[in-house]
Image (cartoon, rainbow, N blue to C red; front, side):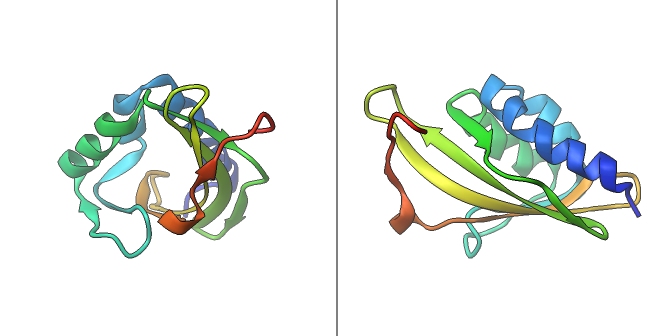
Length: 127
């Protein structure tokens, strides 16, 4: 099982990598056969190539912030994030809870993002 401190570190670094546009570093966090379901219920992105395409489409185009503590239980973790999309002045906000599962090598085997389109809202000064 992956070490809890490693898992916590991955979830804490993840929003900065996404915000900074480092899709390659994010993809490197994943196992070769990993899956992404974002949002939950959408068709899964499966395998390294599909995951790379997923992150290349959004890395550096959104601002993501962690908004609470990472909770680790066994080989899984969950954390709340706030994603800001669009140009300053007309940004939208998506509040997300990501749940990730890790393999024994500490790589992500699945990521499920819990959010829904009906919860997207306009950004405020506090966001």
